[in-house]
Image (cartoon, rainbow, N blue to C red; front, side, top):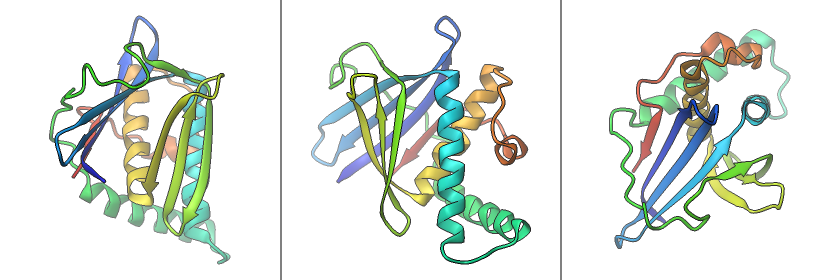
Amino acid sequence: MAGRLQINFEHNSTEDRLLLRISEKESHGMCIEYRAWFTRRFVNLFIKAIDKLIEDELAGDLQLSPDSLKAMKKFQQEAALEKADFTTSYEADAESCTPTGEEPILITKLNLKKKSKNKYFLSFLTNENAGINITADIDLIHTIRKMLLGSVKNAGWNQPVSQSAEEEVVASETGSMRVS
């Protein structure tokens, strides 16, 4: 179990990609940092996938009106974001502890699997199926979604994302999130 997990999205104008950095510090002091490039195409795919995941999780077996679903989604997102720490700066504890190598990997595929109610397994994969696996609850998924949308806005991509995502874009100051 992680002692501290930090997530950061940052736009690299030279690459015109988002750099995802995930730093995990175990309670016994060991640090690992994963680095991955997200292209515009992948970001669009990821946003659509997590929007569908969130809606499916909320709706479950119920038949909800679009307005009810939107209200439930907003309530769940607000509750999730209240738990996140957007004020702490991302600390690259693990500069020398990158299991994927010094250079970020280029993510081209996404696998999402439901583990249980409100728990998911996300795999960010390269063309060679190497990648980063994350177990996330619905709160972390909402937080990643907000950070990603904020980073897209900060990058000035103006790319088409789902309409619900466009309505909710509020740029994050740091593009970082910390979970303790």
